[in-house]
Length: 379
Image 1 (spheres, rainbow, N blue to C red):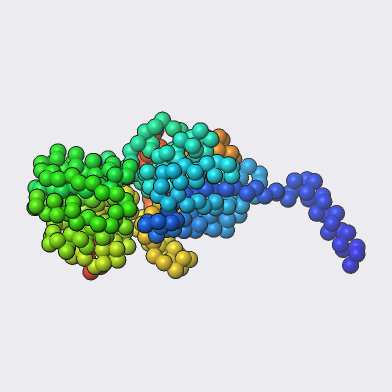
Image 2 (cartoon, rainbow, N blue to C red):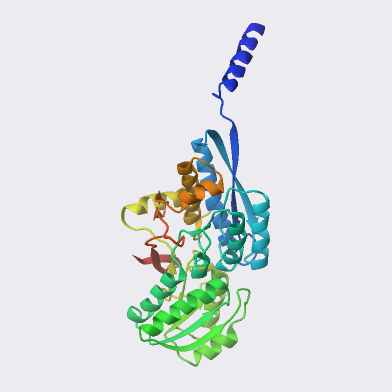
């Protein structure tokens, strides 16, 4: 027994000396989203997408730069607040993360992006759509969904050409996302021949919209467009119904969630809501997308709310760049990230010179019988 132990010990020492036993490196992937506040359900959805990606990557037992790597998720809460967002970003920089996935909102993503840029840490947002994010000249910023120019513009044209809207009222929540998507919608709707009868403002924390909706009701709009998130859009729909406003209700990906029906307390009628999700799959890509949804539901005992598949792909795109660079050092894998050509569950991800996804898709939805109903995938 003693002899066997000695032989095993000698073999272990020789293996280590010859480099046959690989050392392990912990690779920290930061994630930031609103885990508290009105849209915490979306922030948790994002974090779950990142967590599932980390678990899948660790199951692969990857080796990068001659070392076994173990991926670790470092999650922070920004509560959809720009100040908390920059504080969370600095925490991740101080923790020496190898890369960041996030943030969810444009209003937190944009100010945080300078902190990551200054530190040289690559950042991929799975959901921030304000064009400014990738137009600041930072080499570290990327996103895996289409921006507001595409999203708002598509919805504006759809309102006029497909819904035949002539008079349109616009409301935005004054956040970077809400204001941005509303402005792009309004520009496209005007260019298509619509008359903008009102443009009202609220906040992302408001609950009472009776005053602005009463003003809008007098304008008799065919469509009310809301730039903001589902936590505000749902109650707004309920109050529209109580005032007898039967106009179509439109919005971007912020309202285009499975939670909107619950948040509106069942106030929407079939086909009343038309929204667009920044992303979408079609054809033979649907199989992988739906399989992801099934795996997500099994793992977290909940359905995908909105962005989780894009978060999942963002993590894999980042790690793919590390593998191609044969390094987890941000400075070394960043050039490879800009050359990405990755087939994920949301489709092929490649970036243009600004860090925006090439040929980004949008999915138009309505709601019928209390569930989202696909209209079309457009590019």
